[in-house]
Amino acid sequence: MIRLIKQETKIDFLKIRKPAYVFSLALLAITLVSIGYHKGFNLSIEFTGGTMVQLKFDKPIEQDIGKIRSIVNGLNFGSPEIKTIGSAANHEVQITVKAQAEGVQVGESIKKAILEKYPENSFQLRTEQKIGPKIGRELTRNAVLAILLGWLAIILYIWIRFNLPFGVAGVVGILHDCFITLGFFSLTNREISLATIAALLTIMGYSINDTIVIFDRVRENLGGKLHGVNLSDIINRSVNQMLGRTIITTGTVLFVLIAFSFFGGEVIRDFALAMLVGCISGVYSTVYICGNVVVDWHRKWPLRA
Image (cartoon, rainbow, N blue to C red):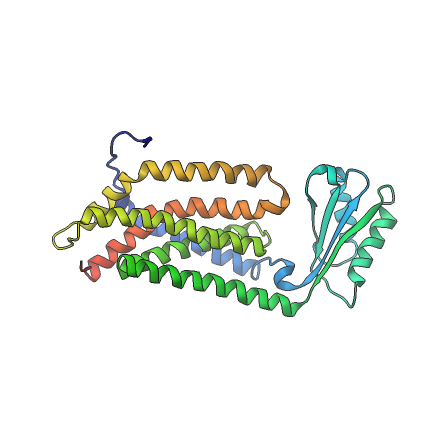
């Protein structure tokens, strides 16, 4: 196996335990303030209900997105989301508004306005979709349920495989990563869609995978003994032993996510951005949060082998 780090490092990661807690609490506080300031999250029409229209134009539209946005803005349907779909050669644009009406009234108003104020580029209707508030509520409930069940399954798995404190630490790390990701979306006022929920579920798996690898090495280094063992030293040693693996795996993932976040299309961009923030937070929480939670638990309620 190729090793990035030839010799085992001896970095005292747990030394900055309190600053790490303060930093994480500050990020969580910023998240809560941002959510309060924006009066919740900027939810997509999958959750709030609305109308989505997809049009295929005859000529390139990349330079005219601003004009199309101004036309739709003038209809007073709220702030529209307008993005190109597929490759530039397709000349397709997706228009999403959080407005609803009987039948296809909203979609017809959008098409009529574009026909009148943007006549130099004719188009064809590809898709028109309307999502009612009832469906939005069901999707919201299902999304929350999926995340909660994921947390429960993870804590049960780690509890059985390791020990309850390790399971709690793993879920604390996951909660930390999910809230930090949601905080990023709140601060930037980006829409939270089903793709974002999928990203959160993926972040949960990625984060706990990294944590389990470290916990596995902790268990090996403990050798089944806890009495008279300095748990902080064991966790520090374990993190240092797996540092090369963490750098390689995380670096590989980050290269792909950065590419998709800044050079990918609109359809994948929010998913990639959520994953990018979550993966960075996941590495941080594995090293500076999960291990510290186990150590603090052990100090208050000593673990038993």
